[in-house]
Image (spheres, one colour):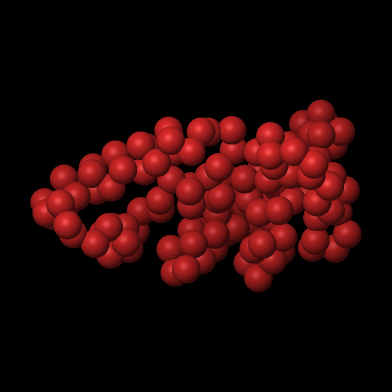
Length: 128
């Protein structure tokens, strides 16, 4: 998930689940996936995925400052070109993560408003 270290991400996710259990007065062994669905809350990784997908949506729709035209890759129809990746560090950059995440969710409608796209992404990630 971006440049966030794996240990830090795991710690934050455990903290997110702990807060969820406190909010619902659930026990330690309560199934967290059910609690996320019940409260309609996205997990940290899903929040990251949604944020990157929204950034790519804005990029494709020309809603970002021009500097991003030099940073992000060109696109053909609904697929974005993913640059060849030679290092693990590069895999954590937006130049790699953006097109990779965008292409993964091609079944989400891209021909809509920004608000509708955000809702669709949240619904899709909550269901899967």
